[in-house]
Image 1 (tube, rainbow, N blue to C red):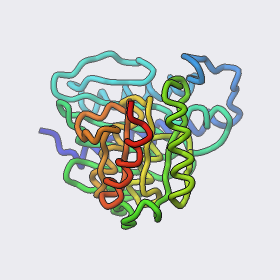
Image 2 (image 1 turned 90 degrees about the vertical axis):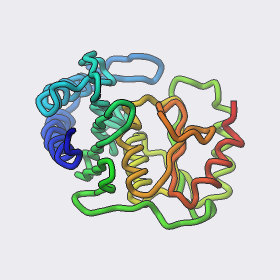
Image 3 (image 1 turned 60 degrees about the vertical axis):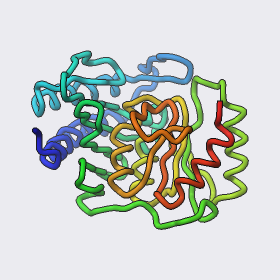
Image 4 (image 1 turned 120 degrees about the horizontal axis):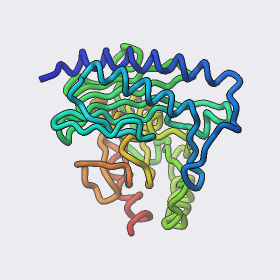
Length: 265
């Protein structure tokens, strides 16, 4: 059995090394070298280079582990352990020279997320969580916000970029939350949204149409910081990112009820 805390330290070192490459490439980045995977879904040589570096470094840390990666750098399967990697969460921000963007790495043991690191490159903030170990920001413990009411909450979300089938419902939910909360923020990185819920900057976050690599590390951060995460139906197991609701534990029931009202199928 691996030591989750020690694994987090090794993940952190790998992520920081990779981030130096990302930062270097951000200087004078050539947006014309960007590829389009799908509608509003971009990938740069920086995403691919970052992912390859992470795969190489993480393979040394835990040789038996498989990978779930955004850019498909490795299709290796692991019987017990699996790395879930987003080499550059917030690619569109990166392409346009704005922050935040992040590197997100999680380790799964069977179907359970047991370690996670989210590194916000521009702000040099490292969010870490491991099973039973709490959540940490730059080596200091963090906790979700103490706010008890949705009316006292700042909400984070992300706009759909390819699946517009629920766009009308989503826009109705935005109108509702604009009127009933402290406001809405859209940073462009789900990993950062979840990390900010974990450290109490946001009270709650919701989005649909995401992938496991966008949310895996962030889910563990929120839970270890005292928050809750589910899909729009309230299921808290095996969250894929297709639907996600995260909040501090006090606001969560009210927030989930509101999201469900608008975003039900």
